[in-house]
Each structure stands twice: as structure tokens, then as C-alpha cells.
Image 1 (cartoon, rainbow, N blue to C red):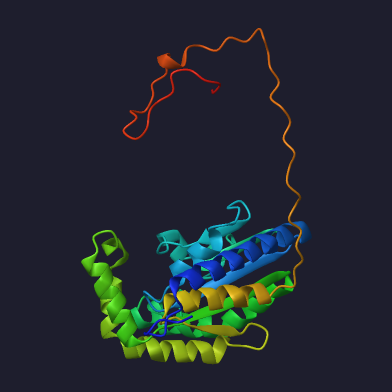
Image 2: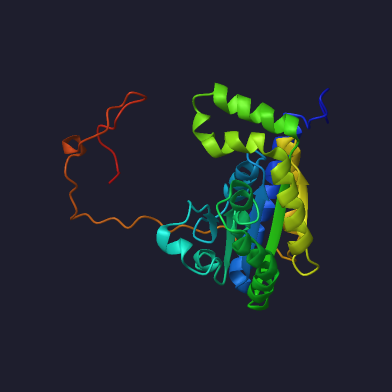
Length: 273
């Protein structure tokens, strides 16, 4: 079941992931049918694997009912708004699940450590965040918060792998590099954040993220356990036959501007539009 390094072997991982993704589809049907509003927050250090989990969650889902929110740095206008204002407009409506790839907790993490907010703004956040979350939960939103915990050694390994791969180098930013030198400062900020926001009403769920496969399966399994749902998957549709119109004559498809068939061949004539 596990290899010599203690990692779940790939065949079992893929099988279990497929099973969990099938359950996610059932959950989505339930959320839509019952008009639930679900917000899931993913936080943690850079390269902790948040994006990978979010990708596996959304892969089988309808993007109209499962959105990912990953905001850029705030604009000048947003910096002068109530801090939570830019996030409120992204909260889920009835029948929707929203996955926040980082969230309002930026203020307790990167903004605090990098000096992007004042001490007063930081203290105000710690005081008002639990109140804000209580308010949105009272409105009917199901709020689930995940913190992806990763070791110093594993983060360094993943940063080096990104740097060596041209296809992944875009994932590295100057902020990521700076975060390496401020490892302890981030740890302290996280500890203070948990002290103020890990509440009985809105707890943090910590995911051991050192092994990506395990983190993905464990997080998805836990997410499915947070909402009681039933299988409302509709029965397969019986498709009608195509209605023929003898008076319709289609223009020759050879007149179309076909994309060059580097692979395979373009059709000469068949029933297509």
C-alpha cells in the first residue's frame, strides 16, 4: 500500500482519488438542490500544496456551482475600503461552493510579516475577524477553514524543484524567496492567528501537507464529512433522435477554414456543423 518512503503507491492513490471525486459530485448536487452556501478557506505556507488540493476538488465539478477565488493584491480603492469588503462580494450564494485560495487571513500572515499593514490594522483584524466569521455563518454560510502545515525541509525541496523546472518557475515570486528568510516570523504570526481565530464556532483544521498525495486525500475526505449529503445524481438521459430536414442543404465543409491537421486528418464530408 505504501512505498519504501512511506508514500501511498500511485495505483491506490488514483483509485481513492477517483472515489472521492465521485463523492464530491454527489455533494455538489446536494448543495445545489438544497440551496446551501459553502465557503472553504485554504491557507498555509507557500508551496504547501493548497493549489493542488483545490485542483483535485474542482476537477470533476461544474464550475458554475464551484468557484475558486484567488485574489491579486488589493487596488488603491480596495486598500481604502473596510478590510473584509473585497472578500464579501465573493462569498457563495445559494447552491454554490466557493474555494478561497488564500483569503482575508492575508492580513494575519503575509501583511503582518512583510509590514504591509499597520499595527493598528493588524490588531483590528484579530479582534474583528471572529465577529466577521460569526456574522457570515449566521447568514447561513457553511464556513470551513484548512491550514496546510509543511516542514521547512519539504518547502525548500519544493521551491528548488520549481526553480529547476521552467514549466513551474512562474510559481516562484520574490515574496516566496523572502518567506524563506522569515520562516520563524511566519510561524509566530500563524500562532497568534490561531490563538484569536481558532474558535469553537469556526475552527481551523490542520492538514499534514508534507506528502501531497496524503494531504489531498485526507483533506477531501474531511471536507466530505463536514456536510451531511445524499446521492441526488440524476438518472442517465435518454437522448432523442436527430430530426432530419430534407430541404436543408449544408454548404461544402471544404470551404471552411480548418485548423491544419498536424495530428490525424480533417474530414472530407460527413454530418457535422
